[in-house]
Image (cartoon, rainbow, N blue to C red; front, side, top):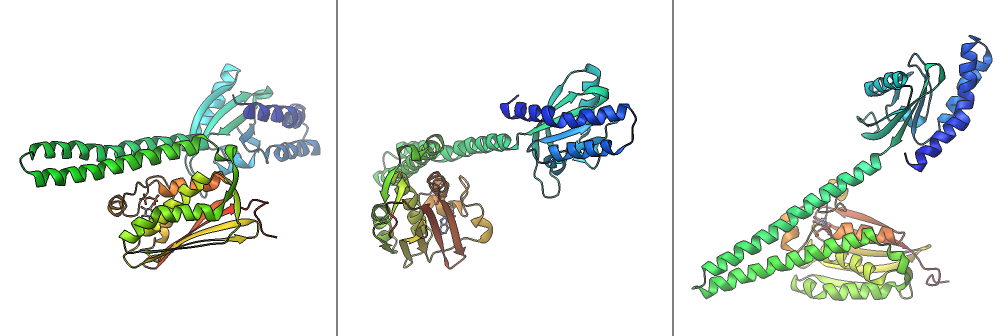
Length: 373
Ligand code: ADP
């Protein structure tokens, strides 16, 4: 049992059960007086704000009091316990005279998602029982995300690796035809570059999740970051016939890791270029806004639908996988942006309209030294 659960039980046993003891004593004396009502009400008041799903149940399986979360997640419905598994646990705990534990997955209810609970039923005197459910949904979601991530990585890596193998065989088989060999080797190089990009982005993302960039934070000149990012994308923008402009307010500083901030802004500029047509304009700007520094990357490119805007920060999510791959995309760029910005105490927002373009805005806490008077 985690320290949280122990603390919770201590709280419930220490305070709530004082009230429960009164209730049980009153019940034994069969006294239907006001103190019975007061004790029950007090117990409800004590349990209500607890973050875990907690319920106190009588010997007749009637819920005497419960925390708000127990009701919200469906452990308690009215004056009964919701899931039949918990009723089985109650029978079990009374027969054995000791606590029983079990993991339960509660189905989604109106306005509540699926909840994974680690449930413990503890027998009390007079056949009553305490039901404590610790919310493990976040742990479950984390392990599901990790499983999906591994599955996605495997899939993404297999594609270029498979292509490299096939292209090497094709080049070998076409040994008598230099033009064909040249063509196959060109494609092979392209797949190799994709593999390289993918592996370095996976490593970047894993490092971001494992290390806190703020541990080695220093004052970062925002204009310097933007200049470096724009310089990195200049060539590819020119090749695509896209104009790239920079307007950075001088003197703005944030606290953090310059290299990671440069990676984040570069990802946004690369996307702005990749998802715009020839002749489009990409603008990178920064300005001070209260105690924040705002960095904007705008384009008048293809835009993103509202439904896709809700998903583009997910790892490996792409609106158009073929277009992403054709521009060397991995589906990890925006996920990296989100991680970098959150690690710096900031947030990222997107405005976009299909056919009109997109603006990504990063808001980062300004360094106190860098804020203009
Ligand atoms: P990718 O490597 O595929 O570009 P990202 O995580 O950087 O992956 O972006 C996710 C998806 O969001 C892209 O595949 C693309 O569909 C969409 N997207 C990102 N930036 C833009 C933009 N500026 N304009 C239009 N679509 C964009």
